[in-house]
Length: 243
Image 1 (cartoon, rainbow, N blue to C red):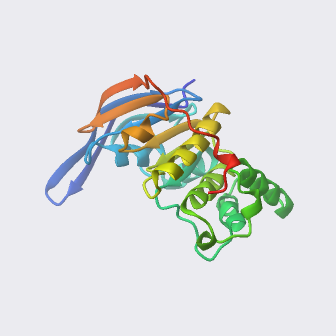
Image 2 (image 1 turned 120 degrees about the horizontal axis):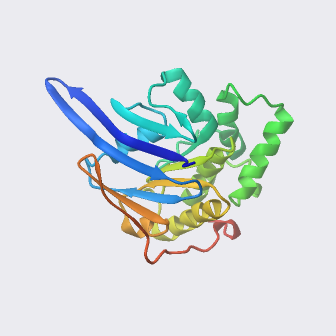
């Protein structure tokens, strides 16, 4: 069973008197344990596809099956439940609460989840495991202002991992980082993928896409090409670094 199965996906928007076709019958399959980079120029449908994969929006028509569950016709509340249970998000801008410690930022998804019924001790255990997994066990009391950009993004990855999702969905996760720190973060994604986590990465940078196993190119709301990475880049394990 595929982690993500998309068939004939169409998404249209009304802008005044104009109808915009963001997706025009797209089909795509992502197997469990895959690491896929999705690329394309502005207007290609990347953001729309990410919103649908992340259960933030639903298609106008077509099917989207996530881990065997058809989420295409689900309402907002049902999509929110699936999203909180199965998907971990990592964004370009980190989206951390500025005056809140790394530990508290990572804990937030568990506090908002209606399905994760845990004691405070159990939540603390999960937070500690997630921060240790990204190499920041000794930074749990630091606020974002006390962390480097790379460390902030690793806190964001820990926050995405804490609910133990089946899929990590990363939207331009290196967009605000320098090249060295970008490689460290991509090394972390590779480690997580090596452990069996499915990773879907949205990026416009070919150098970043080269860390994935497979590249899907979009254009005009359709898949233009879909191929394995011929010379995949491997990054040094970031957990051994502090920046």
